[in-house]
Amino acid sequence: MWSNAWRCDVHGEVHPVAPPRLPTPEHLHQITRSARVPVWVPWPLPPGWLVTGTTFAGDELTGARATVMACTGPNRLGGVGEMIIAAEEPGIGLGASYAGIDGPDPGADMIDTPSHAKIHAAGHPTPLWWIDAGENRTAYVGAAGGFWLWTVLWPEWADLLMVDGLTLLDARDARLELDLPLGALSPRL
Image (cartoon, rainbow, N blue to C red; front, side, top):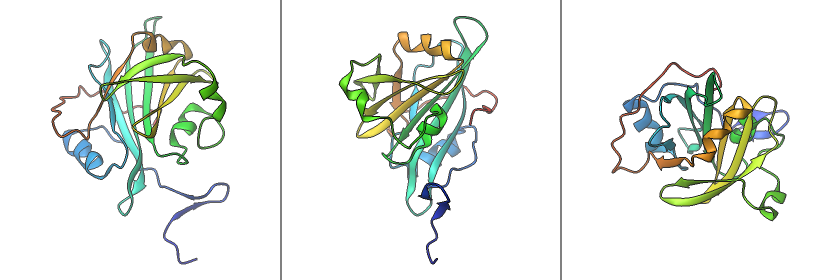
C-alpha cells in the first residue's frame, strides 16, 4: 500500500517503460547516464539503415534496468526491415515482450543447443540463440556483460541481417562519439 513501485495485476511489481523517443544526442546522454545495463547501438549500421527510436524500463530512483534501440532499413529480400535490440537485467521481460514470448526470460533449454548466430558486443564474440517468437518476426537472445541481449526483427525473413554478423557498441562508453543517422520514430516501440 505504501510502495511507489508500479504494479501489474498479473506480474506484480514492474519497472515503468518510458515513452519512445528518437535518440538525439541529449536524450541518448540522459539514458546512458542512468542505465545500469548496456545501451546497444549497431555500429556501423547496416547499409541504408537508420536509428528509429529508443526507450527504457526503470525510473529515476533505480535507473534504466532495460534499454531498447530500434533501427529500420532496407530488407535484402525486399521491403523494409525493422530491428529492436534490447539489453536488460534478468526478470525484467521487456525483450521477451518484443519477441512475443511468455515470461520475462528465455527458457533455460537454449543453453543445451549450439548457438544460431554470432555477433560482436563491446568487442566480444557473443552467441545468440533463435527463439520461437510471435507472428511475422524472428528473435535471438544471448547474454553480454551479464545481461540479456535480445534482437527482434520484422518481418521474419529480415533475420538475414544476422548472417552478416552485427557489431554492437555500448553507448555508455564515454570514448564513443557516434553521429547516429535518425529516421522516423518506429511504431514497433
